[in-house]
Amino acid sequence: MKILLVCTGNTCRSPMAAAMLRQILEERGADSEQYQIITAGLGAGTGWPASPGAIYAMQLENLDISHHRSQALNRDMVKSADMVLTMTAMQRQCLVDKYPDHMLKINTLAQVVGEQGTDILDPFGQDAVKYVESAREIKRLLLKLADLVVDI
Figure 1 (cartoon, helix red, strand yellow):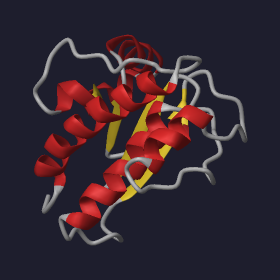
Figure 2 (cartoon, rainbow, N blue to C red; figure 1 turned 180 degrees about the horizontal axis):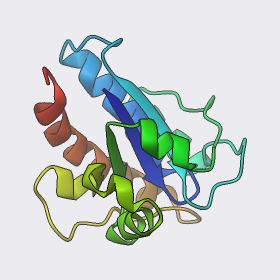
Figure 3 (cartoon, rainbow, N blue to C red; figure 1 turned 135 degrees about the horizontal axis):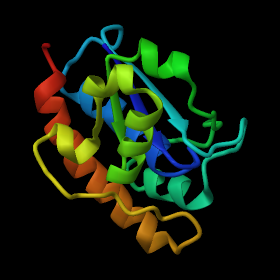
């Protein structure tokens, strides 16, 4: 299963989500070869590092995302993914508008776990507390996602 996590700049939310999802799946005994988790950003440049706040928030989770480099979303990524998860409803709508032929596999992270109207705060440019809050919300939703995808 190929899971594509999408945010705006691919330096905060999606890299944090990818690192935590990998950890959660590993902790649940999922076969690491069964899942491919990639990230991209709607407005991302290429090669940007994860933001310092995101790196800090992940250090609190005992995860290292300092190696992360951003990439811009493209059609091939959407086409090849089994599941495309955005951080906000606006991002989801942007993807559905741009890739209507893939609309059935594009959801917000909250929506795919049965929560409506939950956008994940973009902590970019804010203090470390906002990064940690964003990471906690992402992790809460990822724990629910893992219940759905493990053993699919």
